[in-house]
Image (cartoon, rainbow, N blue to C red; front, side, top):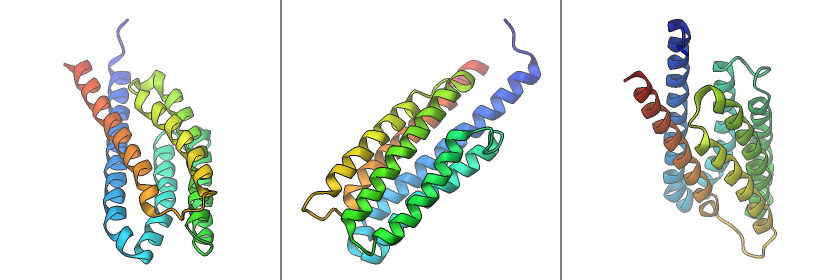
Length: 191
């Protein structure tokens, strides 16, 4: 079956946009990890800002992605992710007054819910784009990490930003793998 030329061009443009989006998400997450491991460790103020920015950035990125894919109404998992991430950013601001155990609990709830939304988004995109296995795996791992964070938050030892950094690092890895996979798959199809 041959794909009509206009449809192939639209599919190629959508794949290019999605791979660019994944690339930006991966780079920002990697930069966040680097900032957390340097400024976040040496300054409580920098750690607080980084902890607030991570879910806020996720909300913005999901909003941008949904708008580029038909809007929030056409993408309920991403709309949910926007709302959950905004609430998480506000909850982190409040939890910072209580301590890092509370912040980690907020990150846990957020990671679990955002992971489920990402998993559903990956499954929904599989038919149109393929190469979504890394996003599906990332969503599942985010959900598991969230549950682990919630359990860890109840511990006697106060966590630090370095307890959250590996979570962001895996996110960076999955987004970069997805971007590269889409780029190379698209090039193979056009070759």
